[in-house]
View (tube, rainbow over the protein chains, first blue to last red):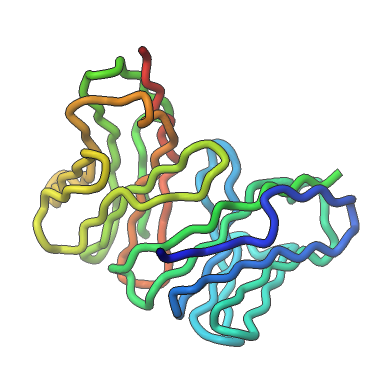
Length: 113
Length: 112
């Protein structure tokens, strides 16, 4: 059974803290994605990676960075968390090519106080 | 520019009646199209996808969608709603790049 896992389901952090969200996939997919999901806005792409150490900015990269040191692992980093980064964060992976579906993790609900 | 419009943010149906969730897209290329479902506090699960083969696509849990190029639509249907279908549904288009473009979602409510 294919699987994308995320390190935490729920996370509460304080403003200014550095936050790490980790995602692991076991499908040998080249592509990995980080989205944030907010009510009424759908999913918005933060960053995308198509290979180890390769990354591309998505639609809303400000305030975030990413790391992909191994093919199966893609980390999202909030350098200095702010309250407007309170959201649901979803990781996904896929094979290369737009015809392939994405597989999603269960999400991390992050609250920044 | 590519875009996806889900025409209804909320849809309510009675159990046992048909479901129609509407999706229109805009794409300069021959796109791939997907429908995903998200149950509360869960990730997204693929229901079905269209990738330039048959225009009527069958998915899981009795859902279907028809690709209509002339109308640029990819509406999701199910003949008979079940209580377990209550969830949020996302229409997604990919024009052939890494970028998947998501609609804003339709929340389906099923009434007993």
